[in-house]
Length: 212
Image (cartoon, rainbow, N blue to C red; front, top):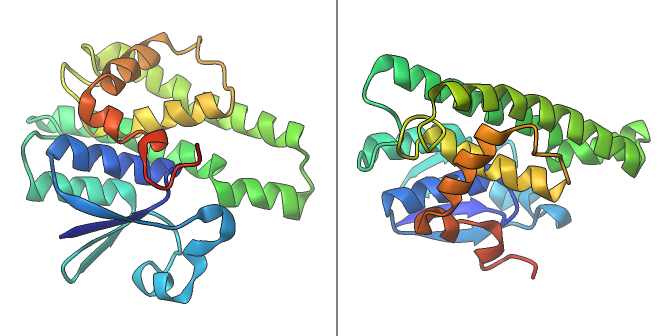
């Protein structure tokens, strides 16, 4: 049995939930409330030395980092594929995913926002400006890539690794009231992806640990 350690509102865990849902891979979830610091518990740190979510456990295998987990899923459960069949397409999709997961999301995750408030004295207005700037900057770059390469979804005519990253990024943008009217291609692709039943089921609000 695959076990996914996550948190309902974590963008990184959301990516993995989307991948698992698209693949139809059975799994169970273990919830860690990031607001209370549950991920810093010693027993969890033995699984994930970074004390971050997600962590995926499959038998004796323990994997961290959402994109690495998604690539592992794609290799172990190849249908439906999350990457195109050609090397050029795979590189483009990976670049979209990296723009979100490596360059954009880390700047507005909870530990960074907490550090801005506690260590640098940023007030709520300053934190919101920080989020809007860095999240908007990353989404603008991906919007141009989707405009260039999309055909209904972020790349081509079916969901890929890129959509697994874009859908949570759009959720975060809406949560933080970022203006999305500047990113029409990205929003269109995201809405099409979110309309799929599998991706809809991965939405944070539909998770057992969600605050309602």
